[in-house]
Length: 320
Length: 320
Image (cartoon, rainbow over all chains, first blue to last red; front, side, top):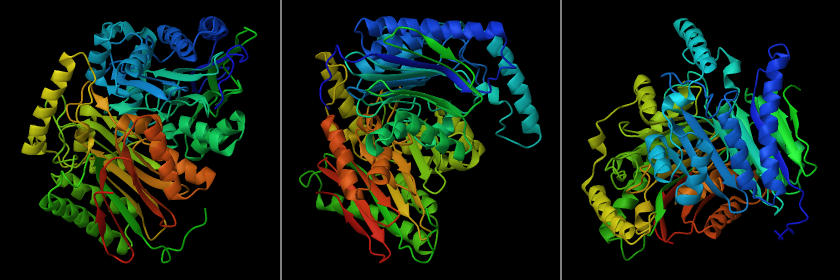
Protein backbone atom coordinates (compact mmCIF):
# COMPACT_ATOMS: atom_id res chain seq x y z
CA UNK A 1 0.00 0.00 0.00
CA UNK A 2 1.33 3.43 -0.94
CA UNK A 3 2.72 5.66 1.78
CA UNK A 4 0.14 8.26 2.70
CA UNK A 5 1.43 11.78 3.17
CA UNK A 6 1.32 12.53 6.86
CA UNK A 7 -0.26 15.92 6.41
CA UNK A 8 -3.19 14.76 4.29
CA UNK A 9 -4.92 12.20 6.51
CA UNK A 10 -7.59 13.55 8.83
CA UNK A 11 -7.41 11.52 12.04
CA UNK A 12 -10.32 9.62 13.55
CA UNK A 13 -10.86 8.09 16.99
CA UNK A 14 -13.81 5.85 17.92
CA UNK A 15 -14.41 4.40 21.40
CA UNK A 16 -16.87 2.18 23.21
CA UNK A 17 -17.63 1.53 26.87
CA UNK A 18 -19.53 -1.71 26.37
CA UNK A 19 -22.79 -2.92 24.86
CA UNK A 20 -25.71 -4.42 26.75
CA UNK A 21 -29.20 -3.99 28.14
CA UNK A 22 -28.78 -0.24 28.50
CA UNK A 23 -32.14 1.48 27.92
CA UNK A 24 -33.44 4.98 28.59
CA UNK A 25 -35.63 3.75 31.44
CA UNK A 26 -32.77 2.22 33.42
CA UNK A 27 -30.34 5.13 33.07
CA UNK A 28 -31.01 8.31 35.05
CA UNK A 29 -30.25 11.72 33.54
CA UNK A 30 -27.42 12.10 36.03
CA UNK A 31 -25.94 8.69 35.21
CA UNK A 32 -26.22 9.40 31.49
CA UNK A 33 -24.31 12.64 31.99
CA UNK A 34 -21.58 10.84 33.95
CA UNK A 35 -21.10 8.30 31.18
CA UNK A 36 -21.08 10.99 28.48
CA UNK A 37 -18.55 13.03 30.47
CA UNK A 38 -16.29 9.99 30.86
CA UNK A 39 -16.50 9.14 27.15
CA UNK A 40 -15.83 12.78 26.26
CA UNK A 41 -12.75 12.95 28.50
CA UNK A 42 -11.34 9.85 26.79
CA UNK A 43 -12.09 11.22 23.31
CA UNK A 44 -10.46 14.57 24.08
CA UNK A 45 -7.30 12.92 25.43
CA UNK A 46 -7.03 10.77 22.30
CA UNK A 47 -7.75 13.75 20.04
CA UNK A 48 -4.94 15.77 21.62
CA UNK A 49 -2.47 13.00 20.79
CA UNK A 50 -3.74 12.50 17.24
CA UNK A 51 -3.99 16.24 16.48
CA UNK A 52 -0.36 16.56 17.58
CA UNK A 53 0.72 14.00 14.96
CA UNK A 54 0.86 11.27 17.61
CA UNK A 55 0.44 7.64 16.66
CA UNK A 56 -2.81 5.68 16.62
CA UNK A 57 -1.13 3.29 19.08
CA UNK A 58 -0.45 6.10 21.59
CA UNK A 59 -3.99 7.44 21.20
CA UNK A 60 -5.54 4.01 21.75
CA UNK A 61 -3.48 3.35 24.89
CA UNK A 62 -4.20 6.80 26.39
CA UNK A 63 -7.91 6.57 25.63
CA UNK A 64 -8.40 3.04 26.94
CA UNK A 65 -6.35 3.91 30.03
CA UNK A 66 -8.77 6.73 30.90
CA UNK A 67 -11.73 4.36 30.50
CA UNK A 68 -9.94 1.74 32.64
CA UNK A 69 -9.38 4.32 35.39
CA UNK A 70 -13.07 5.29 35.38
CA UNK A 71 -15.09 3.06 37.75
CA UNK A 72 -18.20 3.34 35.54
CA UNK A 73 -16.84 0.81 33.05
CA UNK A 74 -16.09 -2.90 33.40
CA UNK A 75 -12.34 -2.59 32.84
CA UNK A 76 -9.48 -1.68 35.15
CA UNK A 77 -10.99 0.02 38.20
CA UNK A 78 -14.68 -0.93 38.15
CA UNK A 79 -14.10 -4.42 36.74
CA UNK A 80 -16.73 -7.01 37.63
CA UNK A 81 -16.13 -9.90 40.03
CA UNK A 82 -15.51 -13.48 38.91
CA UNK A 83 -17.01 -16.51 40.70
CA UNK A 84 -14.19 -16.46 43.28
CA UNK A 85 -14.99 -12.83 44.13
CA UNK A 86 -11.89 -11.56 42.33
CA UNK A 87 -11.41 -8.97 39.59
CA UNK A 88 -9.71 -10.76 36.70
CA UNK A 89 -8.75 -8.49 33.82
CA UNK A 90 -7.99 -8.98 30.11
CA UNK A 91 -6.66 -6.57 27.48
CA UNK A 92 -5.24 -6.57 23.97
CA UNK A 93 -3.74 -4.09 21.55
CA UNK A 94 -2.73 -4.29 17.90
CA UNK A 95 -0.75 -2.07 15.55
CA UNK A 96 -2.27 -2.07 12.04
CA UNK A 97 0.97 -0.92 10.40
CA UNK A 98 3.14 -3.83 11.58
CA UNK A 99 0.49 -6.37 12.66
CA UNK A 100 2.33 -6.43 15.99
CA UNK A 101 0.02 -7.44 18.81
CA UNK A 102 0.06 -7.92 22.57
CA UNK A 103 -2.44 -9.28 25.07
CA UNK A 104 -2.76 -10.18 28.74
CA UNK A 105 -5.45 -12.46 30.17
CA UNK A 106 -6.63 -13.17 33.70
CA UNK A 107 -4.45 -10.60 35.47
CA UNK A 108 -5.38 -9.26 38.92
CA UNK A 109 -2.63 -6.85 39.92
CA UNK A 110 -1.88 -4.66 36.89
CA UNK A 111 -3.41 -1.20 37.23
CA UNK A 112 -3.84 -0.66 33.50
CA UNK A 113 -4.01 -3.93 31.56
CA UNK A 114 -3.87 -2.03 28.23
CA UNK A 115 -0.37 -0.77 29.11
CA UNK A 116 0.67 -4.34 29.97
CA UNK A 117 -0.68 -5.52 26.60
CA UNK A 118 1.46 -2.85 24.94
CA UNK A 119 4.52 -4.00 26.90
CA UNK A 120 3.91 -7.55 25.62
CA UNK A 121 3.69 -6.14 22.08
CA UNK A 122 6.80 -4.00 22.37
CA UNK A 123 9.10 -5.94 24.68
CA UNK A 124 8.49 -9.65 24.21
CA UNK A 125 8.44 -12.12 21.33
CA UNK A 126 5.13 -13.43 22.64
CA UNK A 127 1.69 -12.09 21.79
CA UNK A 128 -0.44 -13.44 24.63
CA UNK A 129 0.53 -13.90 28.27
CA UNK A 130 -1.85 -15.19 30.95
CA UNK A 131 -2.24 -15.11 34.73
CA UNK A 132 0.68 -14.80 37.11
CA UNK A 133 3.17 -15.19 34.28
CA UNK A 134 1.72 -12.10 32.61
CA UNK A 135 1.94 -10.22 35.90
CA UNK A 136 5.57 -11.22 36.43
CA UNK A 137 6.39 -10.00 32.92
CA UNK A 138 4.50 -6.71 33.33
CA UNK A 139 6.13 -5.99 36.70
CA UNK A 140 9.57 -6.76 35.23
CA UNK A 141 8.92 -4.28 32.42
CA UNK A 142 7.78 -1.52 34.74
CA UNK A 143 3.97 -1.68 34.59
CA UNK A 144 2.23 -0.03 37.55
CA UNK A 145 1.17 -2.84 39.90
CA UNK A 146 -1.61 -2.46 42.48
CA UNK A 147 -3.12 -4.54 45.24
CA UNK A 148 -6.07 -6.56 43.88
CA UNK A 149 -8.44 -4.51 46.10
CA UNK A 150 -7.66 -1.43 43.99
CA UNK A 151 -10.25 -2.82 41.53
CA UNK A 152 -12.95 -3.17 44.17
CA UNK A 153 -16.01 -0.95 43.81
CA UNK A 154 -19.18 -1.12 45.93
CA UNK A 155 -21.36 -1.22 42.81
CA UNK A 156 -19.58 -4.24 41.26
CA UNK A 157 -19.50 -6.04 44.57
CA UNK A 158 -23.28 -5.59 44.89
CA UNK A 159 -23.74 -6.77 41.26
CA UNK A 160 -21.64 -9.83 42.01
CA UNK A 161 -23.63 -10.83 45.08
CA UNK A 162 -26.90 -10.33 43.17
CA UNK A 163 -25.79 -12.34 40.10
CA UNK A 164 -24.24 -15.05 42.26
CA UNK A 165 -27.51 -15.40 44.12
CA UNK A 166 -29.56 -15.54 40.90
CA UNK A 167 -27.19 -18.08 39.35
CA UNK A 168 -27.30 -20.26 42.43
CA UNK A 169 -31.09 -20.19 42.19
CA UNK A 170 -30.85 -21.13 38.49
CA UNK A 171 -28.31 -23.86 39.33
CA UNK A 172 -30.66 -25.26 41.94
CA UNK A 173 -33.33 -25.74 39.27
CA UNK A 174 -30.91 -27.63 37.06
CA UNK A 175 -29.50 -25.08 34.64
CA UNK A 176 -25.77 -25.23 35.16
CA UNK A 177 -24.81 -22.41 32.81
CA UNK A 178 -27.48 -19.83 33.51
CA UNK A 179 -27.71 -16.53 31.71
CA UNK A 180 -29.85 -14.76 34.23
CA UNK A 181 -28.70 -11.23 33.81
CA UNK A 182 -27.96 -9.80 30.38
CA UNK A 183 -26.82 -6.59 32.05
CA UNK A 184 -23.73 -8.26 33.44
CA UNK A 185 -22.14 -8.41 30.00
CA UNK A 186 -21.89 -4.64 29.56
CA UNK A 187 -18.88 -2.49 30.20
CA UNK A 188 -15.87 -3.70 28.20
CA UNK A 189 -14.01 -0.69 26.82
CA UNK A 190 -12.20 -0.22 23.55
CA UNK A 191 -10.74 2.26 21.11
CA UNK A 192 -9.79 2.29 17.44
CA UNK A 193 -7.82 5.07 15.80
CA UNK A 194 -6.54 6.33 12.48
CA UNK A 195 -3.62 8.71 12.89
CA UNK A 196 -2.34 11.47 10.57
CA UNK A 197 0.37 9.13 9.27
CA UNK A 198 -2.38 6.85 7.91
CA UNK A 199 -1.85 4.08 10.47
CA UNK A 200 -4.51 2.17 12.36
CA UNK A 201 -4.56 0.70 15.88
CA UNK A 202 -7.10 -1.08 18.07
CA UNK A 203 -7.28 -1.80 21.80
CA UNK A 204 -9.75 -3.48 24.15
CA UNK A 205 -9.84 -3.93 27.94
CA UNK A 206 -12.33 -5.78 30.12
CA UNK A 207 -13.16 -7.34 33.46
CA UNK A 208 -15.08 -10.10 31.71
CA UNK A 209 -18.44 -11.34 32.92
CA UNK A 210 -19.74 -11.11 36.50
CA UNK A 211 -19.43 -14.44 38.33
CA UNK A 212 -17.39 -15.99 35.47
CA UNK A 213 -15.98 -19.42 36.24
CA UNK A 214 -13.34 -21.95 35.33
CA UNK A 215 -10.68 -19.52 34.10
CA UNK A 216 -12.89 -18.33 31.26
CA UNK A 217 -11.11 -16.21 28.63
CA UNK A 218 -13.43 -14.01 26.58
CA UNK A 219 -12.91 -12.36 23.21
CA UNK A 220 -11.27 -9.12 24.37
CA UNK A 221 -7.68 -10.45 24.73
CA UNK A 222 -7.96 -12.74 21.70
CA UNK A 223 -6.35 -11.19 18.64
CA UNK A 224 -8.87 -11.61 15.82
CA UNK A 225 -11.93 -12.05 18.05
CA UNK A 226 -12.33 -8.89 20.17
CA UNK A 227 -9.38 -6.87 18.84
CA UNK A 228 -7.76 -6.56 15.42
CA UNK A 229 -5.99 -3.94 13.31
CA UNK A 230 -4.61 -4.18 9.79
CA UNK A 231 -3.86 -1.07 7.73
CA UNK A 232 -5.07 -2.96 4.66
CA UNK A 233 -8.40 -3.80 6.29
CA UNK A 234 -9.52 -1.88 9.36
CA UNK A 235 -9.10 -1.55 13.13
CA UNK A 236 -11.80 -3.17 15.29
CA UNK A 237 -12.70 -3.44 18.98
CA UNK A 238 -15.69 -5.55 20.04
CA UNK A 239 -17.89 -5.88 23.11
CA UNK A 240 -20.67 -8.27 24.06
CA UNK A 241 -21.10 -11.99 24.61
CA UNK A 242 -17.48 -12.84 23.92
CA UNK A 243 -18.01 -16.48 22.99
CA UNK A 244 -19.93 -15.51 19.85
CA UNK A 245 -17.26 -13.01 18.85
CA UNK A 246 -14.63 -15.76 19.25
CA UNK A 247 -16.60 -18.23 17.11
CA UNK A 248 -16.97 -15.82 14.19
CA UNK A 249 -13.51 -14.27 14.81
CA UNK A 250 -15.44 -11.01 14.65
CA UNK A 251 -12.70 -8.37 14.51
CA UNK A 252 -10.64 -10.21 11.89
CA UNK A 253 -13.79 -11.16 9.96
CA UNK A 254 -14.66 -7.48 9.52
CA UNK A 255 -11.12 -6.65 8.42
CA UNK A 256 -11.20 -9.57 5.94
CA UNK A 257 -14.62 -8.54 4.57
CA UNK A 258 -13.28 -5.05 3.82
CA UNK A 259 -10.05 -6.37 2.35
CA UNK A 260 -11.44 -9.19 0.23
CA UNK A 261 -15.03 -8.21 -0.53
CA UNK A 262 -14.41 -4.46 -0.78
CA UNK A 263 -17.65 -3.59 0.97
CA UNK A 264 -18.09 -0.49 3.13
CA UNK A 265 -17.11 -0.57 6.79
CA UNK A 266 -20.76 0.05 7.79
CA UNK A 267 -22.02 -2.82 5.64
CA UNK A 268 -19.23 -5.07 6.89
CA UNK A 269 -19.93 -4.24 10.53
CA UNK A 270 -23.61 -5.00 10.01
CA UNK A 271 -22.79 -8.36 8.38
CA UNK A 272 -20.57 -9.37 11.31
CA UNK A 273 -23.16 -8.38 13.94
CA UNK A 274 -25.83 -10.20 11.89
CA UNK A 275 -23.68 -13.33 11.89
CA UNK A 276 -23.38 -13.06 15.68
CA UNK A 277 -27.13 -12.49 16.01
CA UNK A 278 -27.82 -15.57 13.86
CA UNK A 279 -25.86 -17.68 16.35
CA UNK A 280 -27.90 -16.16 19.19
CA UNK A 281 -25.26 -13.66 20.30
CA UNK A 282 -25.44 -10.03 21.31
CA UNK A 283 -23.05 -7.13 21.36
CA UNK A 284 -21.42 -4.49 19.25
CA UNK A 285 -18.22 -3.27 17.70
CA UNK A 286 -16.43 -0.13 16.62
CA UNK A 287 -14.20 0.08 13.57
CA UNK A 288 -12.25 2.57 11.47
CA UNK A 289 -10.49 2.16 8.14
CA UNK A 290 -7.59 3.96 6.54
CA UNK A 291 -9.85 6.46 4.81
CA UNK A 292 -11.31 7.49 8.17
CA UNK A 293 -14.67 5.80 7.53
CA UNK A 294 -15.96 4.31 10.75
CA UNK A 295 -18.74 2.20 12.25
CA UNK A 296 -20.35 1.87 15.70
CA UNK A 297 -22.68 -1.10 15.25
CA UNK A 298 -24.59 -3.17 17.84
CA UNK A 299 -27.62 -5.41 18.22
CA UNK A 300 -27.94 -4.94 21.98
CA UNK A 301 -30.31 -2.33 23.44
CA UNK A 302 -27.53 0.18 23.88
CA UNK A 303 -23.80 0.74 23.57
CA UNK A 304 -21.72 3.42 25.28
CA UNK A 305 -19.85 4.98 22.38
CA UNK A 306 -18.28 8.07 20.93
CA UNK A 307 -16.11 9.46 18.15
CA UNK A 308 -13.98 12.46 17.35
CA UNK A 309 -12.32 13.59 14.12
CA UNK A 310 -10.23 16.39 12.71
CA UNK A 311 -12.91 18.98 13.54
CA UNK A 312 -12.11 18.23 17.18
CA UNK A 313 -15.70 17.97 18.45
CA UNK A 314 -16.44 14.89 20.56
CA UNK A 315 -19.73 13.10 19.86
CA UNK A 316 -21.09 10.57 22.37
CA UNK A 317 -24.15 8.32 22.44
CA UNK A 318 -25.60 5.53 24.58
CA UNK A 319 -28.99 4.50 23.20
CA UNK A 320 -30.11 3.72 19.63
CA UNK B 1 -25.43 -23.69 1.66
CA UNK B 2 -27.41 -26.63 0.20
CA UNK B 3 -27.56 -29.84 2.20
CA UNK B 4 -25.22 -32.38 0.75
CA UNK B 5 -26.55 -35.92 0.39
CA UNK B 6 -24.83 -37.98 3.02
CA UNK B 7 -24.00 -40.80 0.64
CA UNK B 8 -22.31 -38.66 -1.99
CA UNK B 9 -19.45 -37.01 -0.13
CA UNK B 10 -16.12 -38.86 -0.13
CA UNK B 11 -14.53 -38.25 3.25
CA UNK B 12 -11.07 -36.78 3.77
CA UNK B 13 -8.78 -36.65 6.80
CA UNK B 14 -5.53 -34.65 6.97
CA UNK B 15 -3.19 -34.60 9.97
CA UNK B 16 0.07 -33.00 11.08
CA UNK B 17 2.56 -33.73 13.83
CA UNK B 18 4.30 -30.37 13.78
CA UNK B 19 6.52 -28.34 11.48
CA UNK B 20 10.12 -27.39 12.15
CA UNK B 21 13.78 -27.95 11.41
CA UNK B 22 13.22 -31.57 10.44
CA UNK B 23 15.68 -32.55 7.70
CA UNK B 24 16.80 -35.89 6.27
CA UNK B 25 20.19 -35.60 7.94
CA UNK B 26 18.79 -35.27 11.45
CA UNK B 27 16.21 -38.06 11.22
CA UNK B 28 17.45 -41.67 11.25
CA UNK B 29 15.71 -44.31 9.13
CA UNK B 30 14.41 -45.91 12.32
CA UNK B 31 13.08 -42.62 13.68
CA UNK B 32 11.47 -41.81 10.34
CA UNK B 33 9.70 -45.18 10.41
CA UNK B 34 8.45 -44.57 13.96
CA UNK B 35 6.96 -41.22 12.97
CA UNK B 36 5.37 -42.66 9.84
CA UNK B 37 3.90 -45.54 11.84
CA UNK B 38 2.43 -43.16 14.40
CA UNK B 39 0.92 -40.92 11.70
CA UNK B 40 -0.48 -44.00 9.92
CA UNK B 41 -2.09 -45.33 13.10
CA UNK B 42 -3.81 -41.99 13.62
CA UNK B 43 -4.98 -41.83 9.99
CA UNK B 44 -6.38 -45.37 10.10
CA UNK B 45 -8.31 -44.70 13.31
CA UNK B 46 -9.83 -41.58 11.81
CA UNK B 47 -10.60 -43.34 8.53
CA UNK B 48 -12.50 -46.10 10.36
CA UNK B 49 -14.74 -43.49 11.96
CA UNK B 50 -15.31 -41.53 8.75
CA UNK B 51 -15.86 -44.63 6.58
CA UNK B 52 -18.52 -45.75 9.08
CA UNK B 53 -20.45 -42.50 8.52
CA UNK B 54 -19.01 -41.04 11.73
CA UNK B 55 -18.72 -37.29 12.17
CA UNK B 56 -15.72 -35.14 11.32
CA UNK B 57 -15.75 -34.07 14.99
CA UNK B 58 -15.41 -37.69 16.20
CA UNK B 59 -12.67 -38.39 13.68
CA UNK B 60 -10.70 -35.29 14.69
CA UNK B 61 -10.91 -36.12 18.40
CA UNK B 62 -9.90 -39.77 17.91
CA UNK B 63 -7.02 -38.89 15.61
CA UNK B 64 -5.61 -36.11 17.77
CA UNK B 65 -5.98 -38.30 20.87
CA UNK B 66 -3.74 -40.96 19.30
CA UNK B 67 -1.13 -38.32 18.47
CA UNK B 68 -1.38 -36.92 22.03
CA UNK B 69 -0.80 -40.40 23.47
CA UNK B 70 2.30 -40.91 21.31
CA UNK B 71 5.43 -39.56 23.06
CA UNK B 72 7.04 -38.65 19.71
CA UNK B 73 4.92 -35.52 19.38
CA UNK B 74 4.82 -32.33 21.46
CA UNK B 75 1.24 -32.79 22.69
CA UNK B 76 -0.24 -34.81 25.53
CA UNK B 77 2.40 -37.36 26.55
CA UNK B 78 5.67 -36.09 25.11
CA UNK B 79 4.86 -32.42 25.62
CA UNK B 80 7.82 -30.11 26.04
CA UNK B 81 8.76 -28.41 29.32
CA UNK B 82 8.07 -24.77 30.12
CA UNK B 83 10.54 -22.53 31.96
CA UNK B 84 9.33 -23.83 35.32
CA UNK B 85 10.07 -27.41 34.21
CA UNK B 86 6.36 -28.21 33.80
CA UNK B 87 4.35 -29.60 30.88
CA UNK B 88 1.68 -27.03 30.12
CA UNK B 89 -0.79 -28.12 27.47
CA UNK B 90 -3.20 -26.33 25.10
CA UNK B 91 -5.87 -27.69 22.74
CA UNK B 92 -8.80 -26.49 20.65
CA UNK B 93 -11.52 -27.98 18.51
CA UNK B 94 -14.14 -26.49 16.20
CA UNK B 95 -17.23 -27.82 14.44
CA UNK B 96 -17.60 -26.34 10.94
CA UNK B 97 -21.33 -27.08 10.79
CA UNK B 98 -22.34 -25.10 13.88
CA UNK B 99 -19.26 -22.91 14.42
CA UNK B 100 -19.25 -24.32 17.95
CA UNK B 101 -15.77 -24.23 19.46
CA UNK B 102 -13.95 -25.25 22.62
CA UNK B 103 -10.42 -24.70 23.92
CA UNK B 104 -8.29 -25.25 27.00
CA UNK B 105 -5.02 -23.42 27.70
CA UNK B 106 -2.22 -23.99 30.18
CA UNK B 107 -3.52 -27.25 31.65
CA UNK B 108 -1.18 -29.69 33.40
CA UNK B 109 -3.33 -32.59 34.58
CA UNK B 110 -5.67 -33.52 31.71
CA UNK B 111 -4.53 -36.66 29.91
CA UNK B 112 -6.03 -35.70 26.55
CA UNK B 113 -6.48 -31.94 26.22
CA UNK B 114 -8.39 -32.40 22.93
CA UNK B 115 -11.15 -34.25 24.81
CA UNK B 116 -11.28 -31.44 27.37
CA UNK B 117 -11.61 -28.92 24.52
CA UNK B 118 -14.54 -30.94 23.22
CA UNK B 119 -16.14 -30.95 26.68
CA UNK B 120 -15.86 -27.15 26.74
CA UNK B 121 -17.53 -27.06 23.30
CA UNK B 122 -20.32 -29.47 24.22
CA UNK B 123 -20.99 -28.80 27.87
CA UNK B 124 -20.31 -25.15 28.63
CA UNK B 125 -21.39 -21.78 27.28
CA UNK B 126 -17.75 -20.76 27.24
CA UNK B 127 -15.31 -21.27 24.39
CA UNK B 128 -11.95 -20.91 26.12
CA UNK B 129 -10.99 -21.98 29.64
CA UNK B 130 -7.49 -21.60 31.11
CA UNK B 131 -5.35 -23.06 33.86
CA UNK B 132 -6.76 -24.55 37.03
CA UNK B 133 -10.27 -23.40 36.16
CA UNK B 134 -10.13 -25.43 32.95
CA UNK B 135 -8.90 -28.45 34.94
CA UNK B 136 -11.71 -28.11 37.48
CA UNK B 137 -14.24 -27.97 34.65
CA UNK B 138 -12.76 -30.95 32.77
CA UNK B 139 -12.62 -33.07 35.93
CA UNK B 140 -16.23 -32.14 36.73
CA UNK B 141 -17.28 -33.28 33.25
CA UNK B 142 -15.46 -36.59 33.48
CA UNK B 143 -12.20 -35.99 31.59
CA UNK B 144 -9.41 -38.44 32.44
CA UNK B 145 -7.07 -36.65 34.84
CA UNK B 146 -3.46 -37.67 35.41
CA UNK B 147 -0.61 -36.67 37.65
CA UNK B 148 1.54 -34.00 35.93
CA UNK B 149 4.45 -36.49 35.77
CA UNK B 150 2.45 -38.57 33.26
CA UNK B 151 3.64 -36.10 30.63
CA UNK B 152 7.31 -36.48 31.55
CA UNK B 153 9.59 -38.06 28.94
CA UNK B 154 13.38 -38.38 29.15
CA UNK B 155 13.79 -36.89 25.68
CA UNK B 156 11.79 -33.71 26.45
CA UNK B 157 13.52 -33.32 29.80
CA UNK B 158 16.91 -33.45 28.06
CA UNK B 159 15.67 -30.96 25.43
CA UNK B 160 14.53 -28.65 28.21
CA UNK B 161 17.86 -28.68 30.04
CA UNK B 162 19.72 -28.08 26.78
CA UNK B 163 17.48 -25.18 25.68
CA UNK B 164 17.45 -23.66 29.16
CA UNK B 165 21.25 -23.71 29.19
CA UNK B 166 21.49 -22.15 25.72
CA UNK B 167 18.93 -19.47 26.59
CA UNK B 168 20.74 -18.61 29.81
CA UNK B 169 23.91 -18.19 27.78
CA UNK B 170 22.03 -15.93 25.34
CA UNK B 171 20.50 -14.00 28.26
CA UNK B 172 23.96 -13.47 29.71
CA UNK B 173 25.07 -11.75 26.51
CA UNK B 174 22.13 -9.40 26.63
CA UNK B 175 19.46 -10.97 24.42
CA UNK B 176 16.47 -11.40 26.68
CA UNK B 177 14.21 -13.20 24.24
CA UNK B 178 16.58 -15.56 22.51
CA UNK B 179 15.60 -17.88 19.69
CA UNK B 180 18.48 -20.25 20.00
CA UNK B 181 16.89 -23.47 18.90
CA UNK B 182 14.42 -23.57 16.03
CA UNK B 183 13.94 -27.27 16.68
CA UNK B 184 12.07 -26.61 19.90
CA UNK B 185 9.04 -25.33 18.01
CA UNK B 186 8.19 -28.64 16.31
CA UNK B 187 5.67 -31.17 17.40
CA UNK B 188 2.20 -29.62 17.76
CA UNK B 189 -0.39 -32.08 16.42
CA UNK B 190 -3.59 -31.42 14.52
CA UNK B 191 -6.30 -32.92 12.34
CA UNK B 192 -8.89 -31.62 9.91
CA UNK B 193 -11.69 -33.76 8.50
CA UNK B 194 -14.54 -33.76 6.00
CA UNK B 195 -17.13 -36.41 6.83
CA UNK B 196 -19.65 -38.17 4.57
CA UNK B 197 -22.38 -35.79 5.74
CA UNK B 198 -20.41 -32.91 4.23
CA UNK B 199 -19.36 -31.41 7.55
CA UNK B 200 -15.92 -30.09 8.50
CA UNK B 201 -14.04 -30.11 11.81
CA UNK B 202 -10.58 -29.04 13.00
CA UNK B 203 -8.56 -29.80 16.13
CA UNK B 204 -5.10 -28.91 17.43
CA UNK B 205 -3.15 -29.93 20.55
CA UNK B 206 0.26 -28.82 21.78
CA UNK B 207 2.76 -28.58 24.60
CA UNK B 208 3.87 -25.18 23.36
CA UNK B 209 7.50 -24.14 23.15
CA UNK B 210 10.34 -25.57 25.26
CA UNK B 211 11.29 -23.25 28.13
CA UNK B 212 8.28 -20.97 27.47
CA UNK B 213 7.79 -18.27 30.08
CA UNK B 214 5.31 -15.88 31.63
CA UNK B 215 2.15 -17.91 31.00
CA UNK B 216 2.59 -17.67 27.23
CA UNK B 217 -0.44 -18.81 25.20
CA UNK B 218 0.36 -19.80 21.62
CA UNK B 219 -1.88 -20.08 18.59
CA UNK B 220 -3.10 -23.66 19.05
CA UNK B 221 -5.91 -22.95 21.57
CA UNK B 222 -6.89 -19.67 19.93
CA UNK B 223 -9.92 -20.06 17.70
CA UNK B 224 -9.04 -18.35 14.42
CA UNK B 225 -5.26 -18.48 14.87
CA UNK B 226 -4.22 -22.16 15.13
CA UNK B 227 -7.62 -23.79 14.73
CA UNK B 228 -10.73 -22.93 12.68
CA UNK B 229 -13.54 -24.72 10.86
CA UNK B 230 -16.41 -23.28 8.85
CA UNK B 231 -18.39 -25.43 6.40
CA UNK B 232 -18.63 -22.37 4.13
CA UNK B 233 -14.85 -21.91 4.12
CA UNK B 234 -12.60 -24.72 5.27
CA UNK B 235 -11.17 -26.52 8.32
CA UNK B 236 -7.62 -25.58 9.34
CA UNK B 237 -5.03 -26.65 11.92
CA UNK B 238 -1.70 -24.82 12.12
CA UNK B 239 1.73 -25.46 13.61
CA UNK B 240 4.86 -23.34 13.94
CA UNK B 241 5.89 -20.11 15.59
CA UNK B 242 2.48 -19.44 17.14
CA UNK B 243 2.88 -15.69 17.53
CA UNK B 244 2.94 -15.17 13.77
CA UNK B 245 -0.14 -17.35 13.31
CA UNK B 246 -1.95 -15.25 15.93
CA UNK B 247 -0.99 -11.96 14.27
CA UNK B 248 -2.34 -13.01 10.85
CA UNK B 249 -5.21 -15.04 12.40
CA UNK B 250 -3.94 -17.77 10.10
CA UNK B 251 -6.68 -20.42 10.29
CA UNK B 252 -9.53 -17.94 9.93
CA UNK B 253 -7.62 -16.00 7.26
CA UNK B 254 -7.45 -19.12 5.08
CA UNK B 255 -11.15 -19.82 5.58
CA UNK B 256 -11.97 -16.19 4.72
CA UNK B 257 -9.77 -16.25 1.60
CA UNK B 258 -11.65 -19.29 0.31
CA UNK B 259 -15.04 -17.86 1.23
CA UNK B 260 -14.55 -14.33 -0.03
CA UNK B 261 -11.90 -14.55 -2.74
CA UNK B 262 -12.94 -17.94 -4.09
CA UNK B 263 -9.37 -19.07 -4.59
CA UNK B 264 -8.27 -22.70 -4.29
CA UNK B 265 -7.35 -24.14 -0.92
CA UNK B 266 -3.76 -24.71 -2.12
CA UNK B 267 -3.40 -21.13 -3.32
CA UNK B 268 -5.02 -19.85 -0.11
CA UNK B 269 -2.72 -21.92 2.09
CA UNK B 270 0.32 -20.64 0.20
CA UNK B 271 -0.84 -17.02 0.61
CA UNK B 272 -1.25 -17.45 4.37
CA UNK B 273 2.16 -19.09 4.81
CA UNK B 274 3.68 -16.38 2.60
CA UNK B 275 2.13 -13.72 4.84
CA UNK B 276 3.67 -15.45 7.87
CA UNK B 277 7.03 -15.72 6.10
CA UNK B 278 6.91 -11.99 5.26
CA UNK B 279 6.62 -11.21 8.98
CA UNK B 280 9.60 -13.49 9.65
CA UNK B 281 7.58 -16.49 10.83
CA UNK B 282 7.87 -20.18 10.15
CA UNK B 283 5.51 -23.13 10.23
CA UNK B 284 2.80 -24.89 8.33
CA UNK B 285 -0.85 -25.75 8.18
CA UNK B 286 -3.25 -28.40 6.99
CA UNK B 287 -6.69 -27.66 5.57
CA UNK B 288 -9.65 -29.34 3.90
CA UNK B 289 -12.75 -27.85 2.29
CA UNK B 290 -16.24 -29.18 1.74
CA UNK B 291 -15.34 -30.59 -1.68
CA UNK B 292 -12.57 -32.67 -0.14
CA UNK B 293 -9.79 -30.53 -1.59
CA UNK B 294 -6.94 -30.26 0.87
CA UNK B 295 -3.58 -28.61 1.53
CA UNK B 296 -0.49 -29.46 3.60
CA UNK B 297 1.62 -26.33 3.26
CA UNK B 298 4.73 -25.23 5.18
CA UNK B 299 7.80 -23.00 4.90
CA UNK B 300 9.84 -24.86 7.50
CA UNK B 301 12.33 -27.56 6.52
CA UNK B 302 9.87 -30.33 7.23
CA UNK B 303 6.41 -31.10 8.57
CA UNK B 304 5.15 -34.43 9.90
CA UNK B 305 1.96 -34.94 7.90
CA UNK B 306 -0.42 -37.38 6.34
CA UNK B 307 -3.78 -37.82 4.66
CA UNK B 308 -6.33 -40.48 3.91
CA UNK B 309 -9.45 -40.45 1.73
CA UNK B 310 -12.24 -42.69 0.54
CA UNK B 311 -9.75 -45.09 -1.08
CA UNK B 312 -8.63 -45.91 2.45
CA UNK B 313 -4.88 -45.75 1.83
CA UNK B 314 -2.89 -43.69 4.31
CA UNK B 315 -0.18 -41.43 2.88
CA UNK B 316 2.48 -39.94 5.15
CA UNK B 317 5.40 -37.58 4.61
CA UNK B 318 7.97 -35.71 6.65
CA UNK B 319 10.36 -33.87 4.35
CA UNK B 320 9.72 -31.64 1.32
